[in-house]
Length: 183
Image (tube, rainbow, N blue to C red):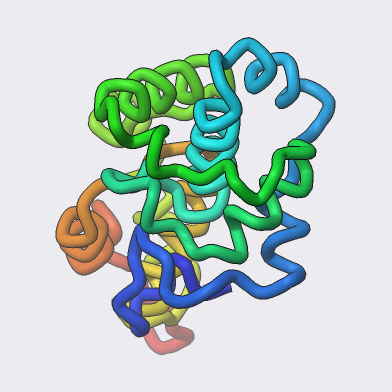
């Protein structure tokens, strides 16, 4: 999956259609999802909620324009929800506040955290500093690791410039000690 690679420019957005294995890995509906989806009024809102939920799992962000998700994702979720092909996201985005409200509900119900939280920032900096100390990686590789850490810890991705800045600045807080056998 290249949804967060530092080298392909697709940070927090779709770069083409997800593979079949990515559809199965990220665009699934588990046993708790139907209870959150079922309460939506109208099939278009159920589909929109499912798109928002699975997209944040995959990309680490909520899309500003959820109707721009690849058609293969919409078709996959329609099938999972048992919706007809006539149901699309056009009606879902007619009221822009709906997608925004759904993103807040998903964030709260599924435990996604915002990067700006002081606790998250501290955890993230500890990870970056530890990674920089223990691995001989360049900034791009460190950024890829950072994005993976954010997604695994359900932290919504900040702007790409923030992740780039933080990984570029990651360095040990104290000088390394060199050990040698010479007196």
